[in-house]
Length: 142
Image (tube, rainbow, N blue to C red; front, side, top):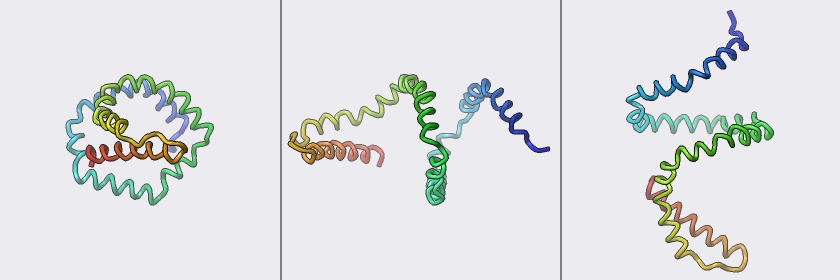
């Protein structure tokens, strides 16, 4: 018997109200995520999967299937509605991740090239800050 897409859609929608709790229960029960995700084998698998996806141009093909108006509707509708709560809910993580960069920005501001006339002089200031932040990122993340 072939699958009826309309019935499958109805089942999908009906299960949505339970999905969050089921997901939380499975996450809480998972005791091996961290060691598995941080393993050398997992890293090699990820690198191979990304390389295969890039070689097949999967990202580009997927993006090509989304119209500008669809993207705008999703980004300005649910995306914009979820953004404030997401930012508020993750403020501590943001502060922890931003913390190591704050002194780098302070130092860069104090030592960057002086303001100049024209775009090139001001771009040099931006590049100075960019390089300082990139160096800090490499120091933190390798």
